[in-house]
Length: 356
Ligand code: NAD
Image (cartoon, rainbow, N blue to C red; front, side, top):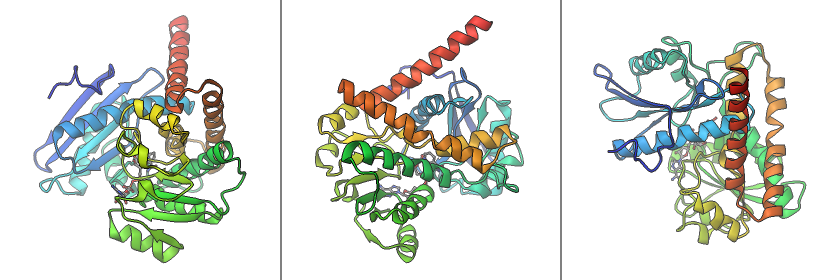
């Protein structure tokens, strides 16, 4: 398994591999960039089909975090961690403690938080071993806690912006949204969409998630193999990445794709494929920045939910700028977002060089 010649290796600053015999922990922490600050990004615990898949995931996710943090204007670089879920390494206090020690050993180069397969309780166990952790239980009304409701809020506001651009509507009332993945973010998003008058088509591979959301909201359950192609105005991918591919894109009926999942595009060319089909794609790391915005306020302290909300309110404005540029130039939104991120990082580097 090559690293430096890996297709997803993008001059990452560091890759750390951790193994802890007593707990079975196997984890990779990828630090893509620390130009804008310590590398911040969640920890994903997932059953990967191979170690190579885990490596690909962490390389892509950490690069996405660099771009996400830059575009969101946060003083963070980009990093990500993956814990390989296996039968011999079940979730346990000790496993998370071992992961916490791994994070602590990087002395603040990497700051962790929740991602897929992790929750606030897991973060607390990690936090017993390291100070470089966020997404801890919220104290009083200071910023903190589970970032996913904030991610969902940013995605909701982003969907409104995309709908205004692509469908010319200032409300979601009467529109249909297909939500793939009813986990932490997807369930919160469904609540916001329902309140706004949207009809919901939902899919998840986990029956419990579907049972919970059906008991709470009027939703129509769609097979997880069909949700991408559902008869909906908006598709909101909120499960895992690699869902927008040369095979899936031709069959998508929605005119807007706007969801929380990281790395929705399988390759950069898939952005152009969507653009050619006149499907408006909200770049994932721009629309799903709500959680990391909350994490940033929590990590830097002295903040409140009101300040988090004010920053999340800027997500639709950023998307709008990308949509307008896409309209004017005919270029895919993902390319424009990447360009925006690279410009912001280069400007910061130039400033650092000048003051050195
Ligand atoms: P989660 O683990 O709580 O939820 C993911 C859900 O997707 C689960 O219910 C899972 O069963 C379901 N799922 C997995 N594969 C599926 C498939 N093929 N079809 C349908 N459902 C499937 O994770 P989450 O925290 O809600 O995050 C969802 C996505 O958003 C992830 O890609 C994550 O990286 C991204 N994201 C999350 C946050 C956050 O604040 N949690 C922030 C930014 C981005």
